[in-house]
Length: 483
Image (cartoon, rainbow, N blue to C red; front, side):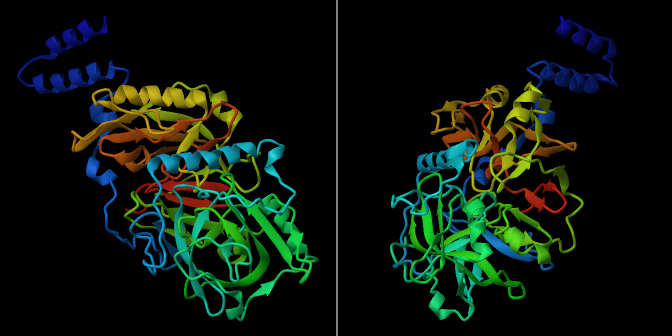
């Protein structure tokens, strides 16, 4: 009955001065009747080519603030992750299916932290060949030792212990692109004693009770990840150098002597979690627990990781309070209160997000939502994409499209509503996971149960400036922080 009344209003208004205005109003009203999607207002266009990585690196200095300690961020499987000695270091880039399977392993390990399986008490990590710690992770290059040796480390907001492989690799070391760190060549390296109070910090940071070397009484750490990757070695102190003017003496880290897993050629991990031994906490006096990053749009572009406020966050950054989550002290929690698709709030009961809780994680690739929330998001997105042919699903991604016949794609905008009044629009690269032009998927997945914690993953964070003001108890976002 609504349509005839719309046409009647247009007939009444129709004259030589108002015809064009009437047509505009009618089209938009009628469009809004189609499940609430007004294409001119709530859809946006993107060039398909901009979602695809290039074969060469396109490096950028955007976001590398001279007032802060800023490091360049690159995707570890992209062309910007240079191989220092190509003939010596060889690795196989995982397939998209492998990436998503490995991502699921990380998610499963996060979900397991709800129960008693979170903590292990045996530091004798089983010698299994694991896969990557997180399939879509990003790396930064830091200096370790005196003189400093440059090492490429995966930075991870969901981990606390920073570690790298160390010579003499008493048991096992995997292949990495730089020479393995040799503590005997550093003037600033020291081991931590088993009797040191610092040694006991490992229990909460790694989930394992530290061991003790019988010959040297050196504190032994052991950390195992959800995909069975692991590192075991000496808990030590060393000089960590971030930039030419920013370094930390006595930085606590793991000097790995038995390491297994496909870490993509990186030399180890840089822990940015909330535990006392994370880089965020160890540098708190200088940086006031304040850091930010921007993940590039594709694996052929670069982003940044910065520490300290410098000139402070820009006015474009909007904040939401950090929440408390029960799934381990390492994680940063967010309060999601709703999701918008095509400019309209998707019908999801408020209890769905409040009962599961949400964390933001740089190491998880695909955002995981409670099953009820994901179904509602997917159905609304499908309605807005119904003009495009569907494609086969890709592993955990069940909503995919064949866009090979389109140079430009019109898609419904997706926005997350957080507590504190923040509504965050995702970039196009944060909505689609592109295997190829003929298989472009909605980059979200549902948890098996509504009670499992939701995870705001790194695909959804692409191109956003993400600001962690841990001391201030908040996380902020701003658009277009990097290419």
